[in-house]
Amino acid sequence: MDTRPPPAVRPRAARVATWAFFALNGFAVGMWVVHIPVVERSTGISHSTLGALLLVLGAAAFAGMQVTGRLVDRFGHRRVLPAAGVLLGLAVTGPGLAGTWWSLGLTLVVFGFGNGSIDVAMNSHAVVVERAYPRPIMASFHAMWSIGGAIAAFAGAAVLRAGIPTAAALGGTGAFCVVSSLVAGRFLMDPAPEPDSGAPADPAGRTRPPMRLVWLLGGLAFALMLAEGVANDWAALHLQDVLGTSAATAALGYGSFAVAMTVGRFATDRVAALAGPAAVVRYGSALAALGLATASLSPWVPLALVGWALFGLGLSGGVPQLFTAAGNLDPRASGALMAKVVGLGYVGLLAGPALIGGLTRWMPLNVAFAVPFVLCGLAVVFAPVLSPRREPVEAA
Image 1 (tube, helix red, strand yellow):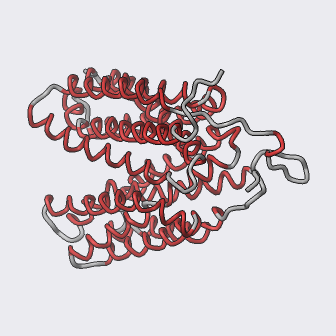
Image 2: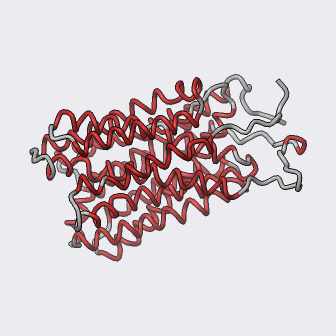
Image 3: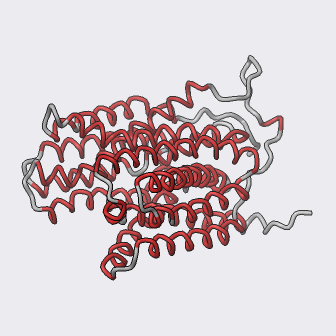
């Protein structure tokens, strides 16, 4: 007996539910980020210890991605994604209760694992929802993550200004995530079973996509998310250290990047429908390289801000196309394949800021930006990997 809503309604409800998961994930991460300085002071740890613990968080997130990818393929999104959201909600409360470096480390392991789990599960579900639509919609989900993070920035600032204890603020965030996950989880959808005749096979009889293609998609995700990580951590410092602006003006560097990226993600789906995913990655990466070069070489603050905005606009659409491609390589192993691509992208996101920081020991900051510039150039070269290899999977 099938008690699911009618097909005409169900994809729309699943789309809204997926928006909710992306937004609550961005909100949870954002609330943790704005409370990092408070948690650092309350636990009495140094900057170096905090940096090491954040690496532990990243490693736990990567592990969560790999585990959850397989769980999604085995048990389905309707079970795994809400569970990941509940785990994230419970985990985000932990740092607010930590009083020592080791207790903070333990809570960050759980938080990282939960964040990696929901990341893969919601992206994999987004691919399933997108298949039910006649046009691309993946980038809009990523835009909702940015919206959730922006709301957290304002909410977190208000909470800190009001003097609300960190444990209460993160506890409220966790409760919101738990309740939202349980409610939104009622409207998720699992992919329709793949008919045996529809499984693409090569002459050798293999039905799995070549791993070379998976690693190429992962390499592109690594490159583009490394570039994004550089902007997250170094855009403001570039304006302050290289162009000598005030801290308030320097904050506009990241602000222009983040706003342009959010706007770009809302526009990307229509562009992808018209031009295709390969064109989004190719021309978007080229625009990002142009924007970064402009920001790096400009002696004027207004032009540098334009450069950072172009950088964000160019990067905005690439990663969603890569995740969609990974999730569609093999619908029967969508979660596991996406976990590899998302995981490599996440490694790039973490590695970028650290790599640039290391290079600044030997060269100026704007010269070190040559690394993400080159990676954007490589993304332009390898973008054709996203060109569709169409096969007659279903009748017109």
